[in-house]
Structures are given as C-alpha cells and as structure tokens.
Image 1 (cartoon, one colour):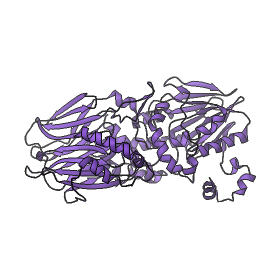
Image 2 (tube, rainbow over the protein chains, first blue to last red):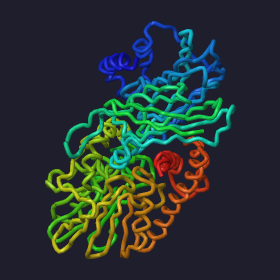
Image 3 (cartoon, helix red, strand yellow):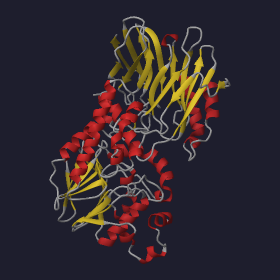
Image 4 (cartoon, one colour):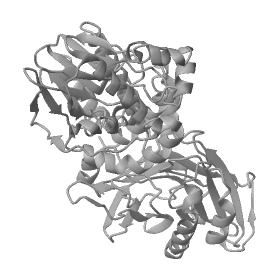
Length: 263
Length: 310
C-alpha cells in the first residue's frame, strides 16, 4: 500500500512541487492529493460524529508537532475503523502515516508526532471495514523564527538508534490503559546533509511499527518521512488478561528493532 | 528599506543621506576599547525590522577587524559593514558566526568584498546544509526586500570541540571556543583576551525568552560552567552587554530551563503528553520574558522529546 502511495506521491510532488512551496501554502492541493491517494472513492468530509483530530494551532517546533486522533464510536467486530490515513497537505511527502486498526482496540485514541514546516491542513481519513471513507481535518500554522524541521543533535540521535521504550501507567486487566511506544531513530528524510561525506544522507526512516498483545495484533502503523525523529506512537487498549505488549519495528533499510513489556 | 526607516524611526528620508546614519539609524555602542555592537530589538524578524533582532558587532585590532555575527539579513549586514567603515579604515579579516540561526548569519555576504575568513563551529557547515532550504524559503517571505542579497556562506575555518583556536587581529588576540550541544549543536564563543570580553552568541539571552534548539541538559550544564567565568564584559546573543548584569541574566536563564526540566520530568513520569506539558509547565514565567508566547511552548516541546530518553 505504502509503496504504491509512495510512487503516486513522488509523481504528485514532482508535479506540484512548485505549488507545495509557493508563497501561499493554502492553495488547494487536497483535490489532487485525494485523487492520488484515494482515486475516485467518495470521502465524507467533516466526519466529526465519528472522529476528532487534535493538533496545535501553531507548529511550535516544526520538527515535533503532536497529532492525535480519537474515535467517538467504539470498534466492534461488525463495524470498525480499519485504517486511519494521515495526510499533511503541504509536507514534502503529504501521505504521512497509515494506522491499521483492529476491533480489539475499543475506542480509538492514537497519537504521534510529525514534521510540519509550513501552513498546512492536517487530515485524518478513517477507512471503515465496509470501505467507506470519513475525514476530519485541522489547519496548522507554521512556526516562526529559527524553527527548522531539522534534528537538533544529530550525533545524539544516531548514538541511540534502535533503542526502544514501551511506557504505560500501571495497567489493570479489563480496563483501558494508555501506552506509548517510542523508538530512537533519526528518521532521515533525505534532506539532511552529512558534513564528512559532503553528501545528502539517504532517506532512512522507520517504515512500520507493529504492536501486539500476547502476539495478537492491536495496531500497525506504516510511517513515512513526515514522522518526527524518534517516532512515538501512543494508543489506548484494554488488556483482557495478563500478558506481554510487544512492538516490532522495521525501517527503510530493513533494520529491525523489537521490545516488549509484561503486564 | 524605506519602510524600515519610516516605521522604526519616523524620520524623513533625506536626513539619512545628510547625516552619519550608522550612528543615528543603526546605533552602535562601544562596550570597551575597540569592541562595538548593535543591540538587536526584541521582536520577531520582519521586513520592517530587517531581521536586526540579535546582537551583532565587531572588534578592531591594529591590523584588521573581526565581525562577530553579521546580521539578520543582507541589508543589516550592509549597515554593519558601513558602521565598521565609519570607525576604521582597516579591513575585515574574519567573519565569525556563533551559530546557524538567521539573525546571526544572514549578513555574511555583505563582507565578501574584503575576502575575510569565515569561521564557525565544526558542526556549523552541516547545520547550514540541513536548514538552508527551509530558511531561504521562509525568510524570503519574512524579510521581504531586506533578504535580497542574502547568501549561505560555509565557514572556511572551523573550530573543533575541546580545541579552541586563537586568531590575531594585530596586538589583539581572540580565543574561539566550540561547545558541546547547548543552545544548538554548534555554539561558538569569542573571547577578547586583552579586555576579557566574551561574546556568548545565543548561549545567553537577556530580556528575550531563550530558545532551545540543541539540548536542554547540555545547555544547563554549559550555563552552570559559565557561572564561574571571570570577565570584564559580556555581550549576550540578545539583550544588553554589561560588566555586571550578565551574571543575573545567566542565573535567570539557568533557573528557567531548570524549572522547565523539573516540571516536564514530572509529566513524563506520569505518562503525560506534550500538549499537557505545553499548557502547564512554567506558566509563572510568563511575565518574566519578552516574546514568551512565541517560544515558551516550543521550548517545552523540544525539551520534552529529549527528556523522554533520560
């Protein structure tokens, strides 16, 4: 899915690069992006009865913009949100993440951190198990001053590459608990420079984060270069029995990292 | 340019030509013998303030002049260059950049005619390369006509960590020291050995809220070490140069980041979010800093993701 989308967005970025970087970033890129990512499928806009998207009004730090999506309708095996696609219209790669979700999650409450370096719409498009699409969006203003979407300490980020954390409050069986998976990764977007080789560093980013409980998948996220350094995924789930929460990560160079935590 | 004069100074344009404008329109203060600076205004960069928001200046030796930070736009660089010519006929032999931020490096191209040696931290070239595209795109809009002429000049001489270098301006030596990640990952200070005057770059902000674009822990450590420095004068990156006020400014900045760190650690420990921290942390500092609204939440966000890895 992500590969196909990557191809499409490379095409779209190539064609629309000029407008993506133009002085008026509010130019409606969305109609084009919609066709590139979703073809001629109908998307119900302003689906605020189903989803809530939260993002700061202004990207305080262009390199780290927290974005969260909550559902207002609980997942059931008959009717559930299968995917939540995150699109950031004016980013170099607008298609930013795809959260694959399961009925086990109950109410969806997910968040991550993205790079946002100019005025843009941030969109969450829920794809139901029946294939229907429902969208909510927020407008995020660019940060001011010296805030660049560059890493702050490249050496420190590389030094801890692959380190992982699974964090959560003390869980109780049968009750929803919020958990966070973080992996230390520079998430190079291909726009960073290596002073020693004097060359741009190849894009090297986390491609997928798969989270399971007792080996049963809870959610999996396809991620791209919009995701911040040290990717973080927060989500809520309900442990039905004692067990282990595990996270498996694969990056664009097929490096794998994993971590688990007993409950 | 005209807009700058009119809005900032409210004086007729013809006066610019008839008077010595470096003195009246681009004020330069002498900190101590041969050391001059223009104090940046505590505003966000804009076309009307031509990006002149940081302290920039120069040191005059017997042989030549060193520029320390060149201005927030090419236009400011030309003002600074004119201010130097008003003080001395000696050429500019060094342009030293304390770090990558636009308000400190955008005037660089205004000194090219003298073919000076451009100097920075060993990580400055990478920092420029990583931000150049973004800065060019953003600041062309922010600074408008003041931006015209701005170039990104990679330093030809760099200073390595733990290996300070000394440069000679003719009977006047400057010691350039590179720091480990603090305000940025490539901060450089300049010490005038004759007068014991230190240019800190943005390791110290006075009046204006400091911006963390490096490492909160690293900067706190650097500030702690700076407290024991013995100096006659200090020129911060923003705010007033002084012989006796900087210690208080340094303590205030150290306290601000220590408070941020303490409060963020508590929130992280409780699995709180960046959003929550942005709403709670350090709100009592609100009236202590200019431009608080612009950078405080940014400082929290940037610190939060670092403190998660302690």
